[in-house]
Amino acid sequence: MSSVRVFFHDKCFDGSTSAAVFTAFYHACIAPTAQFDYRGVSHKVGELFAPEDFAGQENAIVDFKYSSDPRVTWWFDHHQSAFLTPADAAHFRQDRGGKKFYDPHYRSCTAFIAHIARTRFDFDSAPLAELIQWADIVDGALFESAQAAVELRSPALQLTLAVEGANTPGFIPRLIHDYQHLSLRQILDQNYVQAELQPLLARHRQAIDLLSGLLECRDGVITFDLTAQAIDGYNKFIPYYLCPKGIYSVGISCGSFRTKVSVGSNPWQPSEHMVNLADLCERYGGGGHPRVGAISFPPGEVEAARQAAAEITAELRQAAARIR
Ligand SMILES: [Mn+2]
View: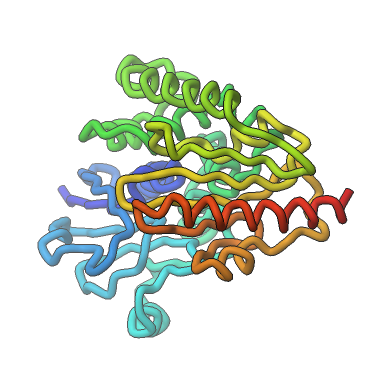
């Protein structure tokens, strides 16, 4: 019996669902009795894989960076930055094995794997349609409203909170198994899922309460200062949920290793004539994407962070006034 080890993007809904679709495809089209084991992998500085990691007879990487290690037999990714080095990209381009696939145009790696499995291996992905559709919504941040993104009424969004926040070993591999056999609603109702989810939901509700007490919205810009709060991470759509008319948001928070200014824009407001927030943050030594950016300061430099946040807020208020 063959053994397959799957490396998936850890603490990521699309990473976990990619592993499930790959497993279902492999059992259906390659080897029905193959034994699977799963390893979550995260982005970090330096080597992403240890040499002893690739111990399966087959080793697959899904929703994560390429490795040129010859023991890696399958690879699927959709990230813009899929290759750590030009040498890795060249290694992929000269591969003729037909088991390594890359397309950065896919919103989710899950949908990409399903597409390749369907078109090249005749896999029937229809039983996994719900999983594939939600991976696209979550990885593409295609939420219909701030309510949908914050109230987490869909089973998939509650499962996303659990996947991103749970630390119990074996939790995601168990989900990967269940994704192949149960609906998302049925999975959500499992005791082992509720045990992970309930404390995370309580923390999520605390963050909403906390922010509703201290954020301000004036002239189209939502501002909040969390430097005095013990809060470790929050759903970035909460400001627009609480202030739907806000066009931009500027928040300050303290982590163990940095003080952070977070600058965002409301995805449910029209996107024409928006300030490029990556450019704006770069002027202060930060960066990001056109519609969301951040600037990091050393842990003690709260005043410098506040100064930057105040300047950015003033600039965004003027920009918001030009839009409205
Ligand atoms: Mn992904």
